[in-house]
Amino acid sequence: MLKKLILAATVLSLAACAFDQDKNAGKQREIELNGKLQQTYKPVIGTYVGQITTADGTQDLEVKFFELKVDNGAKNSDGSTRLHSTLYATYKRINPAGESYDFVVGFAPETGDLTLVNVKDIKSLGRDEIQTVDAKISGNNILGEAKAISGPKGIVRLSLKARENESTGGGKEEFAYYERLRAQLTAISGTYVGQMDQGNSGPVKGIVGITLRLYVQETVKEGSTVTIPRLMGELNRADDPGHTADLTLTGVYEADLAEPRLTLTGKPARDLNSKFEAAIYGKLVNGVLEGALTSNYSMSGKLILKKQ
Image (cartoon, rainbow, N blue to C red):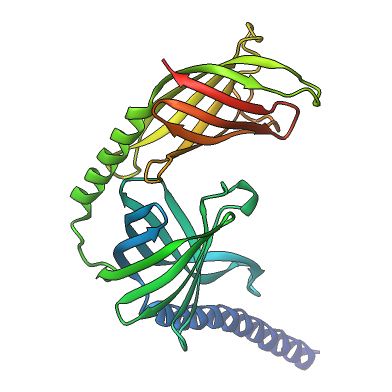
């Protein structure tokens, strides 16, 4: 009997060791794979500066490439989340200042090909927002073409400014960037009044008065004293004295275009968790906003609003 107990204990001990080894092997494979990927990304990671040349002129850019470990949906044998080293990029319009884009990046080290894909769902992108950048890295230089849903956007030319962990004097530059952005957004802030033509075919017809207030909201950057300006909006219909259909909006202003464009997206002010979503897209020239309001329900129409 004692021999059987000793044998059983030995078998269980060996099985436990094998299980632990399997768990450790899975985690070790993850570490080794991510280590190889990090080495692959190393020639790309860093801060690059340059320009994009479009039909409307040139614009100064800063693009930062960096590595993040993300959950790929799989589990290790010990039940822990399996992380996958992934290359990302942040594309910032420096001068004229503008909103940033975040991209997930594909890199082929054999050819130097880079493919940047906007992390935002394509359905939520404006027609002229950059969706992809197809590029090639050669030494410390990157050359590529930016594309939007509407078509080719421009040619991107970048040169390495600093590798990872190198100082770029970013504090002063970041402050100056947000100051330029703040000045642009403040210039278009104010109250716009006009009409929306809802047409005669939909469930809501006719012309209705519209008031749109644009303002700048400041948020403190995490871990910093720097404040980031954001364009916000409030929309009210003249046929809604109870303000039940008011919209709270966030905006993107593209001042660098020949005809500056404004994109606003938002939800009902009384219920920001509502499934109702609305968007305003149009050109903003000399204090006149001309465009369209669309929504996933019945509220839509052509807008002409003038700054008061």
